[in-house]
Image (tube, rainbow, N blue to C red):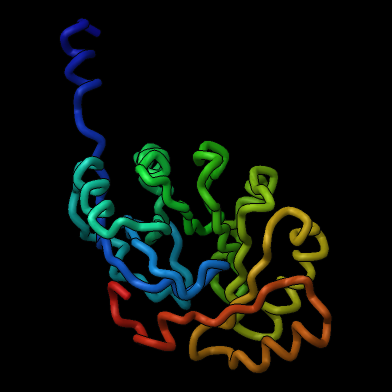
Length: 227
């Protein structure tokens, strides 16, 4: 490759396809309720039956990473979440995560990922939220169990539970992989599919070492995009 062409390639801006950037309350995870800036990337290789962000599968706008950082910075965020779709489906998600961690003052940056794609190259400063897919999601065969080796106690593992069978499956995986020794484990009832009281009763009955969570943003705003 001629040096002048190589220099041109290196100077090209990093760009990502973005569905939306918005400021809201975190609806899930251990930072639930805290004001957070969300960067929603476009595209996802999965099709979970309960997905509430199908509008992020296609479309979006190609935006230079510096523009993304500039917009995020206007909120002076303490917490930033990169989500999707499946954000890791875009290779430039990795440098974006690092750039967000480098903001001054340094925010807490989290990544919501399906668990179907490799997380080994994610910046270690990022809180990885691994959304393992249950059988009722229709995508449990996509779980990349090798990802568990790359988790730390600062990361989180989430199960969206659709029914009792999903619960029993998740309970078995919790024990089989000793998940609570790897990261914080979250059980969430599928919105308008499994009553939260049922899931709470099962967790208490079995004395599971997990955090139950409801989706705060859905309780406040339903399925409204950008919330």
